[in-house]
Length: 457
Image 1 (cartoon, one colour):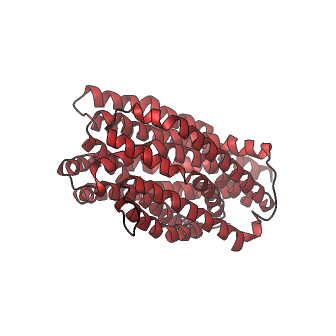
Image 2 (cartoon, rainbow, N blue to C red):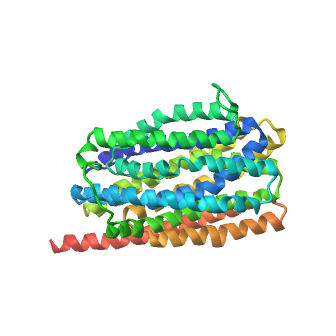
Image 3 (cartoon, rainbow, N blue to C red):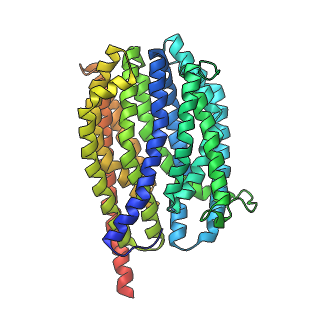
């Protein structure tokens, strides 16, 4: 990354960092997409079992990943402040933290997964597939969280093309492994939906190995000497990461867990409804990659400018990011509405499931506009290391507004399962308004500070 002076330079640097992140996030989402589509082709029970497994694992993964993503604003601000010598210590301490988190998750999973699944009143076959899928994913938890740290380091340097290339290298293998393990090809056992979990775990190990090789062997990563010296565990640095990362993790967990809880609550409906809901959510998640990627780009660039005390430049990046996000939301909403029938056919051969998927996708259109404002706003706030209030906003909007409303509409009105989607949309819209209001307040605060500094010079 480098300092920019004109709007054109800022737009160019924004796009240069954004596009590889967008490609990377889309490719990572493609792994989940192939989990659902290939499992769906194996059978409706496989799709439903994988859906339950994904919705138990996803909030845990994304929430804990977000804790580790505290590395991004920390490294970005260190770069802006020209304190590069401190970066290696941050990365190693985050890797220690990722190992601790991994072991904690594995330990808890061993003791609670069976009892959690037993409480969902699933069909026996669906419950078994979900359990085995999660057990297979457990084999890849350690590399999953460790890679998050290395990716955050690489991206914070502005080298987002590298994470894109790493993902490009691993996605084809992931698809081949899924095909082999789900359908029993190349002499491997036919595992159905469980095979998707096995393939994903093997992919996590490969992607970590590649990322470690890149940081050790290639410039500009090599010069930071991440693995060249021994760093003892620093409780002070660990606390710093946790202090910033925990609210980020809680906010992300609140956002993703509510979607997973809705899927689990839908277990009272039939298997076709569960499968259709999961398929529609999976496809909608592809379009969510745009505001998410814009959010990650804004965290990097705003963090860099804030570290250098260039608050007016940080604000210009905000305007660029939000404008692109809203424009893209219009495109995404129209695409989902126009292609809903074709999308449904990709996910299932069951006529009942196909019809339900199309109905759910109509509601998915409305997610686009709220996400376009909420997610980039959160990324900007993280660039400022403003994370506590946004976590409160996320919890309130999703758990105290969206979920209760959805439960009421689904169980006490004619909307049925679609009521949950109305509740979710309401929660995201509320979060968008609150986060944007917080951003306006923060901008005014830093504008006043910047003006005061200029006045004293």
